[in-house]
Amino acid sequence: MGRYPKYPEYKDSGVEWLGEIPKHWEAKQVKRITRYHKQGYYTNQDYLDEGIKLARITDIDDSGKVSFENMPFVELTDSEVEAFRLKDGDFLFARSGTIGRFGLVRNPEKSIFASYLILFRFREADPEFLRFYFSCLYFKESLKKTLHGGANKNVHAENIKEQILICPPEREQRSLAQFLDYKTAQIDALIAKKEELLERLAEKRTALISEAVTKGIDRTVPMKDSGIEWLGEIPAHWSIIRLKHLCSLLRDGTHLPPPRVSDGIPLLSVRNIVNGEFINLEDDSLISEESFEELNKSFCVQKGDLLLAIVGATLGKVALVKEMPPFAIQRSLAVLRMKPEKMYAKFMIYFIRSSRFQKLLWSNIGYSAQPGIYLGTLGNFHSILPSLDEQIEIVNYINQAVRQLDDFKKKVEIAIETLKEYRTALITNAVTGKIDVRQVEIPDSYTQG
Image 1: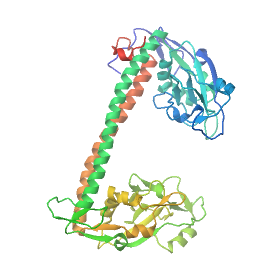
Image 2: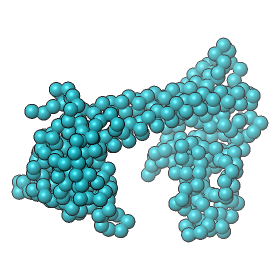
Image 3: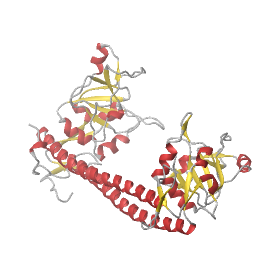
Image 4: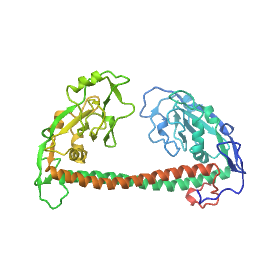
């Protein structure tokens, strides 16, 4: 924050964690500016297509504003609407869940708020300044220290009212809010551009993999029609083969999982495929050694096997099994053991991850409680078959290209995180008086009145 000066004079705020504040500012508890607070309306009725809009925690966006766009409708009496109706300038705080989440109500449609929200109406404070103050690190960390409950912590109205508020004069509150509106809009625009870049990198990564595993990396070789609609043309010297003929093992996990125990062998599932790797998690289900041995009579997953998600919303995720302690798998996973004389396992990983194969999977799913692919269907899918040497060459090419893309992706992600940290620090330093931004020129579009 070195580019912004400090205030000419400071005084002790009387609050240990806050330290000094500008001499003309005042530190006081939120309750001193609270005009009214109320817990929201409880309803268990089904949502309707019309009626009174109901504000929920999910209707509060990350900028601290209440959005009316996706609110559901409920039916209330006139007296109930009057008792819980939202007004311009109201604040809604989450009572549980995402502690510290809040939203400022602006230009409200006819709406009320749900029971897991607390409404606050304030006086003698600019609402836009409060929106930034409530998002600062000091306020959120202080609020977390006052929570009630066990595993599920709750915020009470009194917790909020006890928090310290640093108040500049109202005119200065407005100018601070205008400054922060201006600067955070600039930062958010930069973040949005970098997030768009991440999307383009992901698309490029997927396209690169798909092109390499279905067309090869030598653009000079002659092509031929594969005879498979979803594959299209392939290099003329490649073959087509059904997936089941490439596997020495094609099975899914247990459909009747044994009883869980507190100490035993992990029983893993699709949730253990994380960022393309198959890993153990701290909260994995465990089964007894006896149950594990019984499951092993059918088959045992080995290092070098492929594990493919065949049930659920993440169907199509795939990972190579590395050196791991013993484990069993549930039915959400299929194990594919490649015949090493025909198929290089890492090539098949990339082939399964290709956009063409993923579309094929999802176009052949069946539904029960959730989407799934049958092993018979999976085994009958066609696969391309280059020579082993060419498979290895393609994998090495993809590895190098993907590594470069991933390195660039990490740099962009670090830049995004740095911008977010700067945004948070700027807000915190501005609303607590650590920097003086009164002389910063702001475009007319960000000034009010």
